[in-house]
Length: 181
Ligand code: AMP
Image (cartoon, rainbow, N blue to C red; front, side):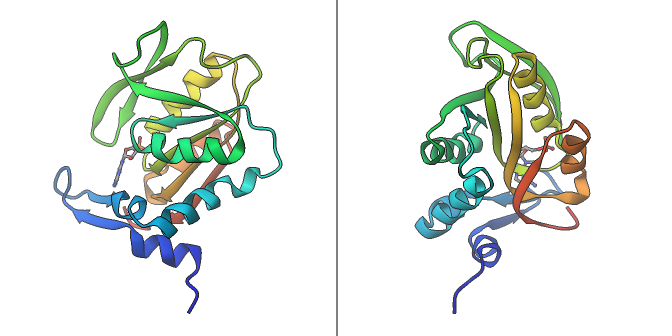
């Protein structure tokens, strides 16, 4: 029987209880990435809403956003922007502090990665509290990007990330959600 996209993705994602600390259900997408069909269907699902649009750049959040974002950029014939943890990029950067489900950190991107008015899609594997994606939105907008949407394979709606991005005027697209955490 043909599996829906949601069923196929749910079956390919592994949940690790109490990682990286007690009470967190870690949604591990390495099993999805290792499944050729699930990986392809995920990327197809992520780019689907933007088919036919002119997207200048896909911005991926380190590290799992790089894997998904590289594949999306190829499919959309767009450029790719890496948004990285601080200290990793070699040229002049812009930096922002952001809050995590488990602490505070800083991320950065190259100052010349975006041209004013570029249409950009932001991608990561999962949105939880939305702190990481909010930081990336701020960086991209600071450099003049027009954020067309932010997309994620997994939404944890109870942690409020989608609502946080929508309140910033960002369209959010996700493929599956896990209620409760
Ligand atoms: P947040 O900033 O709270 O939206 O957290 C999103 C970032 O943390 C993403 O880069 C996710 O990969 C990672 N993350 C947060 N919670 C989880 C979780 N339960 N399972 C897997 N990754 C997570």
